[in-house]
Length: 105
Image (cartoon, rainbow, N blue to C red; front, side, top):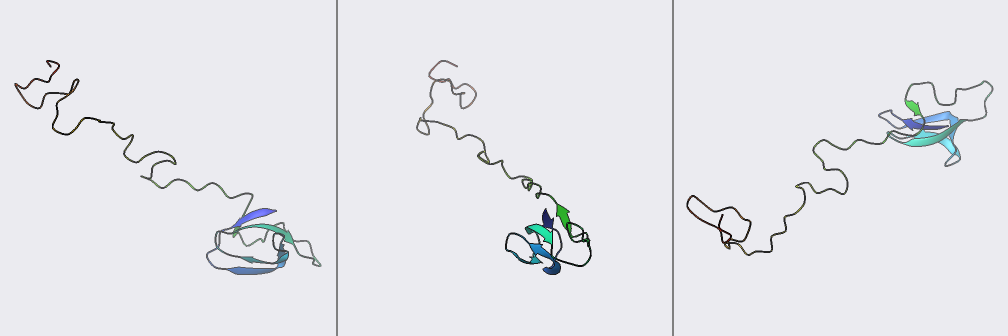
């Protein structure tokens, strides 16, 4: 059974096997393991019963607040302004009162 280890310290579980490595289960914080009980004289639960494992695949990690979603720029699309600074072009607002652009606005 696949499970995610949620403990804060490395732990060794001699009664369980990590089927990914074929060895005794050594769980590190945040690790995801395919677990099975090792041969024993009594039946064991599918994952250790110490409440440090969450059965199933790990949930996806949420994006950090304030971080842009993948593939998107933080400041939005870049402005395309082929005009040189200081030139007043068609469609631009006047710089101040009484000034008029080349298109008469």
